Each structure stands twice: as structure tokens, then as C-alpha cells.
Image (cartoon, rainbow, N blue to C red; front, side, top):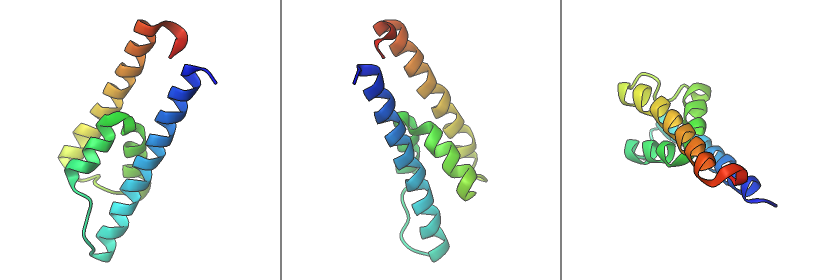
Length: 95
């Protein structure tokens, strides 16, 4: 496998994990159990999990009313995309 394949695989897996974390937090909210902190949820998004977070918000209808998430999660998606573009530019087509 090439470096590009590994990078895509890692980012995809992390986005799937982030998506699941948003679902788990929604389930905990419904059941009235101890929740995952907003900081942890946003950190997952900004650490290359923005797409998973955005999909989790939409799929689970979770944190969709909170202005912090309405602004920060799409921003995380844009920053994640910028990191990928910059990595491709700086490393060539190897990433």
C-alpha cells in the first residue's frame, strides 16, 4: 500500500469513529446518562474528523441547535480539507 492509501484509510476510519462518537453522545443524551463533553466532540472534528462530525450531527440530529457546533463543525470540515490540499501540495501526489 502506498502512503496515499494509508492516509485515506486512516482519515476514513477516524471519521467513522467520530461519527460513532456523535451517535453515542446522542444516545446518552436520550437516556439521561453522563455525556461526552462538547470540547471532546469538537476536538474530534478538528483532528481530521470534520466530515464524520457533520454527518453525525445530521444523521442523529445531534447538536444541530447549538451555534458553537453550527459554526465550528463546518469550519472543521474546511480546515480538514485545507490540510489535505496543503499536504498534497507540499508532498506532491504521495499523499
